[in-house]
Length: 120
Image (cartoon, rainbow, N blue to C red):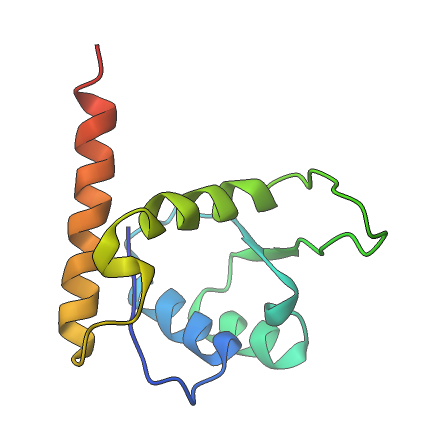
């Protein structure tokens, strides 16, 4: 897992390019990236093309019909965020330093992985 905690005045699409730049070369088998509507547009596509040329972006859009519809691939991200928000320190923005927020995010992720590995 990789994460970057940045200032709130940075757009999600710009933060996404920064995140993908940190992954450059670590996962050469990564071919498809699923993202929500905040990452659509030419600016993110161009930034990602500079950093990771072989990665194709698939935008998963929210259903606007007014009723609940399960969207493929979107539930994976929503479920993971819900699991992480069950940790008290991550449910609100308590941390003053970005490195502390990132450390608690990693601790919560390790906790989730250990619980899955230790299930009987």
